Length: 301
Image (cartoon, rainbow, N blue to C red; front, side, top):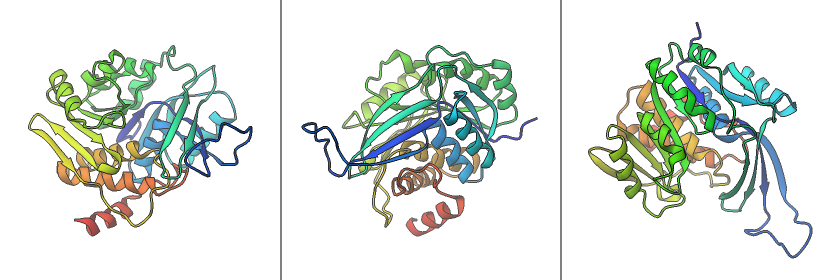
């Protein structure tokens, strides 16, 4: 039987980050000079490597293509001890993202999810990977909703990261919201996450909700109310916000679900993990370690 503590369910792929020399693209000329860096990325890549970096026994359920990128991702995961028993093949190839990166670390993302809308994962294989684990961390490729009841039946706590929500009434995300014990979303498209949190709690009153607010910090919502937390301050500058939301979720869930720490401490630890990630340029290989997270927690408490 697998010995997994956490199972990450989602998309993984290769990100090409295009770092602009200014805060805009000059469309009046044919060529812009940039720094272009490739890496293992997307929510499944960041989350899986984030847990592994904290010393958590991690499995990944998702898809890659039968191509160079897929072979590279499989090799990276295997080298880091991430279980790939349910790393399936997508005939359309490995997912790709192009991220235009601005000087303040913000981005514009162009995402190619390949066949994720029509794929159907093996329920039997997924059930074996879920067996004995404590937590299933779901991202939102379309095929992943088929595994929500499988994780629930296996007795796992379910965390759903519904990412950069535009509308609280988006039907695509409802399965992930209704099945979740923990809900994460980015408030990038909203000035205040509280109205969304209130609506999500009406749908699923037992949720614990964490919303990343970027430079403004973080919000925590439960049936007891909504609390706001200021950002944590680390010395290194923000250079790349890719993976920040995944690091927030990984840091929080490891602390609260696996280590049994309080909600307040878990929010802070999640924020430390996210802020640390923002100081790392174009790399999911430099997620925060457990020792370093503990060091920053002691400095900030």
